[in-house]
Length: 405
View 1 (cartoon, rainbow, N blue to C red):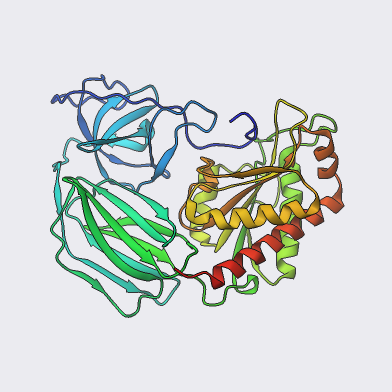
View 2: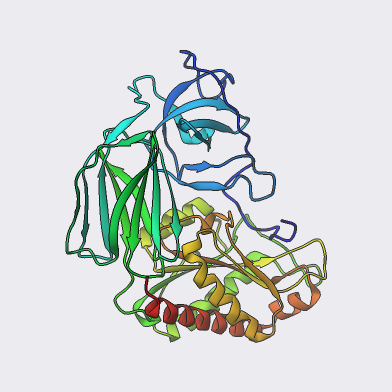
């Protein structure tokens, strides 16, 4: 992706797949021969499964985050990644720091699922509980028309004969499963609204809990919490302007503060990932945001390219259920006479990765383009951008409030 920002921090790296035969040897995590099979548990800060070998600066495409303590069968190793056998026909890669060998594991290649229950809480969530006797690996994705969350449980055969759904549910419309392969169980959670508002997953004992965020009862900025991420900061300067030498970390903060001001004028509650020139790792930003639980996140950056003629605004999303916000913001930004660089999906940027809340990355303009950099240094442009992002948020909320499944 030639014109992706040279400055954006990415949490994922280049990876390669390999497959190997079973042996009984259990080596340490730093000297795994390619023909070794062993068992371990996920660990560390935001472990994630990846599909395969990443050959661009984004690194390998991620399947998604996985809870800690998930039991994995490791069948191979690359320089930076272990290869995990998810099921008979599916493998994934995981950073070597995110899985630890455990010789005490009583690994079961296939487990039986038990009963399910779904209910609504007094807060902003509906919850699905799925009984599983082992912490099996899982992946998930969003679907549209109708909106749904699909979850793949690996190494699972169904013995689920009870799916209890309580009247307290407010966002979950229906809940069912399908045995797509002998050892893959697919869970479908149908939603009542067209707009996805987010979800999170994790184990509590022998139960996998899926927390589905409800659409807010009043869908206006004055009743929502918006998080703003000023990209880079501290030791990570980001890109630099080619004419005026503007430093990305300084201007993302200036634009973030103006966006904060405009959102507060609209009576929204605002969370800032940083308010000064501080170093803040992207994974730590995600953990911080997961704790704060915003309704939406806007991450601000400036783009850069080798070709100085390239210019314009672009918006980015990873999960298809979050695309509407990115399209409304892009359309609104074009009203201030910025060229369109585009709306980019399946984007592997760290702050687009969480499924917990709606999120959008905005690359406001190109620091490598003279005309764009001239705009960026103008305080009036800062105000115009903030107003258009707020306008895009309002347009998105009107869509979310009216669209139904």
